[in-house]
Amino acid sequence: MPSNALAELMSGLAEIEALQRANPSPLKGNALKKPQIVRAIGRAEIVLLSSHFERYIYAINEEAVEAVCDSAAKAYSLPESLRLHHARPVIDLIAATSWENRSKLLAEYSANEGWLWEPNAEIVRLEASRLLEWMKAPSPKSLVRVFRIWGIHDIFRSITRKSTISSQLRLRIEELVSKRNNIAHGDFTVEATYLDVVQYKSAVRTFCGRVDRKFSQQLKSIIGSAPW
Image 1 (cartoon, one colour):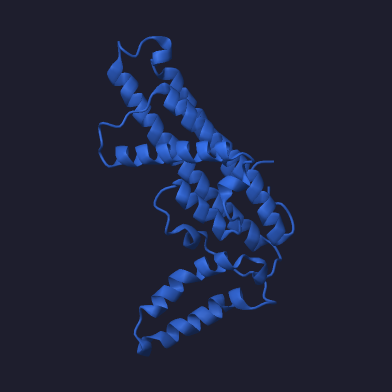
Image 2 (image 1 turned 135 degrees about the horizontal axis):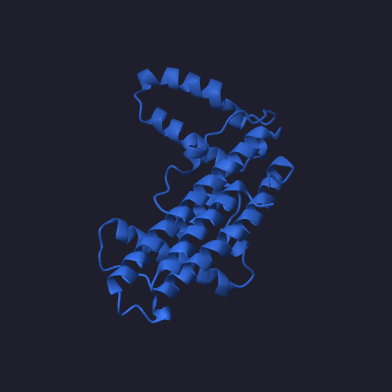
């Protein structure tokens, strides 16, 4: 059974497919007759596809945090990288506060989140947003960091057996995110052909489908059962 995040992504991809059917694409021989429409639809597909992809990453992280918090797992079963990332915003705030004003913050941290570092403590509460507050866009580099927080060293290598497939996924996702960012920043020269969108959509579907399975296995190793 897929995660709710993946089910939502599939609904989003259906929206992209609807746009593709409406696109008088080169494959239908109408691109030269309606170039402005073809171009506008291609750009819209890039923005939507990238947005649905990014939402999947946030949603799967939220779903994983919920599964962990609902389990009876111990704090030390969480990867150290996750505990460090979760603690970072508060620790950074404490570090940026003058010494004479730190006592209250330290007491609050100890009372509310000290359990993260106690070997026999159960997981109390995690905030999903803390783990990904640094992410600006779901680039391949960021994706590796996202899942490394959860204990998966290189998500691309973990979900592919061949380096060529891993490289292709990285390339397509990098192109998709880069084009989306350029469009969002007002670059009117960015275009996406019908075939571009087909390839990007395939990469997103493949990546997220495989991530869903791999991440579920990883969470099983943490909390003892697969959450989806």
